[in-house]
Length: 594
Image (cartoon, rainbow, N blue to C red; front, side):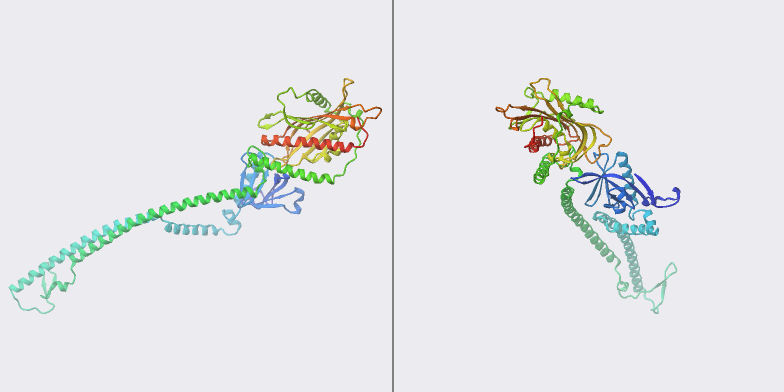
């Protein structure tokens, strides 16, 4: 993972937002589709954008895709320690780093760019030339929050306020009542004094005083003399009556207010029940929406890495089996069409003496060991071994299986026996070993190449097999050797054998793109000749080849056991029929090669 900075100056001059201008680049494996699987891509992180190119050398041709990180969701995979899922709305990138440490570096860098993106941070405001926006935003937020707070009071809070105001009003009414009662007492005393003055004047009449004259009270203040006619009417206010009326009115108001509060409380309870019902409806709708979105997401990303084989695959075993079977059916149809236009290759079959030597290459001892093991164990009769189960019998062909599992991975050894007329063991083993005609009969291979030629009868081959979704694509690196084993008894036929077993090589290391399978396969053939009638020469009608084919395959990854066994049961007989028919077509009308 490389870093480049577009800014100049020392490290001390770089402030936090300079992370926006740092370019990060490196190789990540990107999930392309269910056919090609994981592919290495050059990924660049710059200016809050994640882009990818086919390779670093092809950057000048433009990126093949990009994602804006401002709304991206970065999800480290739960089980794969090297994988990152980056999603923006319906677009999802599945990426795999070289190791967990590189994945962590990418996640931290992406999160840093994401945190610095948009207008939500102080640094982004500074970049856009408005530090005042920070203050303005704060004040606007404050105003909005205050308004929302005032309007957002619940009804119970409002009712509590009304009860508080009611208490205050009650205290005020009590105070006013006391004041009015005092005023009423003063007025009563004044009226009583006026009545006494009027009675005294009636008893002791005096000369009339002019208007405006006053009597002096004992305290020296002047008091205007009231006219003798109806002093209460002149006063104009019945304080005691008004006080009684005011008290009754306020009591009615308070009673009405209390009643309103009770009604509002009841109304709030009713509305609360409605709100609860609406919330429950909303919850159900949201759950249905999430479920629909998940289903839609499954359909939109169907074929993504989460649906690949593995114990945590989102696809169940039945769907896995159906998908594999459908993919194999499609491959069969494609193969039927391609057979019509296939051009046969002419490859001469070398004499048998070439294949009799052991060889002197660095794997010679290993090859000899594998040959002897197959000669000892593979040719043993399976009839007395109860562990072998006969799974298919079609004419001369019989296929046996022994169920073996290790750490949940199916490692069932398979053994098939067959008898084919008209071809020799030499011819069958030659075409099985010869890489020049491999693509003419092997329909499961996508591509292959000879990594190293060890000798005339031993090569190291790397081949990738066609992907059968949702299973991961497989590749195999193996040594293929052909040998002729001379019979120790003159009455027994010679044995031809091709053994293919996995090896390691620096020029074909495992990659993220494929799952590396391990194999140990042998094709063992013996030719039986029936004497012709009279003086006739031996023809292909007098030849019968007995075939023993054994295969021990470690798929290198987890897949449902029922699926693997069903596929093996379906494909191995087809493979033997296809290969033997191919050899019969190649040798028809040609001289017999023993």
